[in-house]
Length: 277
Length: 277
Image (tube, rainbow over all chains, first blue to last red; front, side, top):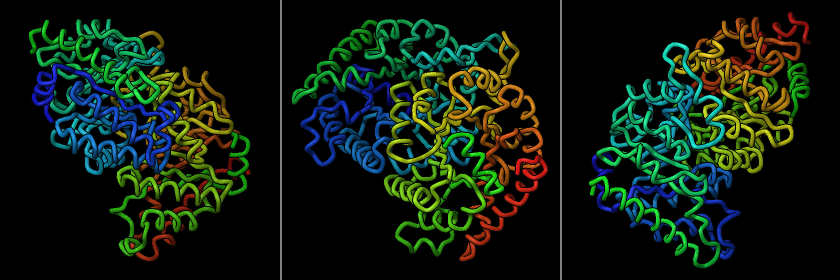
């Protein structure tokens, strides 16, 4: 999927919502534990309840890896289910990978050849040759960490470059945007850092941004839209826990849908106001 | 395993070698393809051929993930085999993980609860709350990326802090060493950057360093030892491809052993000269 096609999906669904599949076996409704694959059973219901309201799903790989082989099975079933039932969906592997070139090559094979993800999140610390192998696949994306939503972002991401005066996240944006295009590279910018979006948009006006941190982490959708929206929307806003765990009984999927819908309605208003739909 | 116990292993085996299990299905001897699990069959022979010469194994997770569920099965079998046959071995998950706190918690569960790894490599970009969850397990380790062995290290790791004049990798060392102890935190420093080890040892004189890049990547063991050795050895030097793919036929394990042995002999001389054994 390229940027134009992604924007088409956003206009069609009147939404730029991504549902994060951070599926925690300890948090899903107890009655699902009687099924043969509780994680997949949960995901399937969440997906069916929200697919018309969102343009992307983002399985967080940690939540699958912590269950070993069975977790990997649940992940494969989840990705294959989305791809077969909702083929137009943008599927993000939230993996935060990044390693030396020959190893990043193998990760790219994992996510784009073995799985049929559209995008993978990558950490920038190891630089160009750790990122580029993910960009050699047509219509697949790297989503590079720029400014993250967590407290620890303050440790290194704001360190100012003695030569340029740029904060590290700005250096990451300016350097890495030369490695790819607006059709294969986007950036993670946390919703909890919405006030920085104005500066970020000066550096990468046309790139899509994946924005986590709305919902459980406390970021504001209105603020994100105010500074982050561009003429192709340019935003994918993720919510995970606030949707997944909105309910805890048999009605969990219905409650998840209500949460997703309230975000979608808010997004539709934002898109209308910006005359993007 | 704590630092003292690790040093004991180094003295007993007269080696500080780690064998990187970057097992690539496209590179292993063809005759293994007839076995039910070629990746595990290869690893088992490599492990049995080198276990008396090394103190650690380091499966590189990308090489398993790219095979999906089957790769995960091979990885579990490999880790369980090492743990049951060579219980004193230090086993490193080369995973380069790192995410917001609740996600890093899940990765820690994956590697330390589900698997019985001793250590996991972690990327520092997301800061303290992405690293600390790995430190809450007794006798388990974080191995944090400081200065990596690849070309892309030059993109961000040398960016100088306007306030302190420190390169980013030095800022990472100085900041993160407050998060843990010499019993639960080590650092990745590439052998291709041996000339920087002298400066790094001023910042972290007592921490163990995991040093990749000897062998296929061209780093020199003598240089690494000259600047990196401390009074508990303080080094784990990794070689992967140069050992794994030394041979390509039925004799591959024997050839791997010869490669490992030549490194072990060199390490024994270094340890003797430093009067550590």
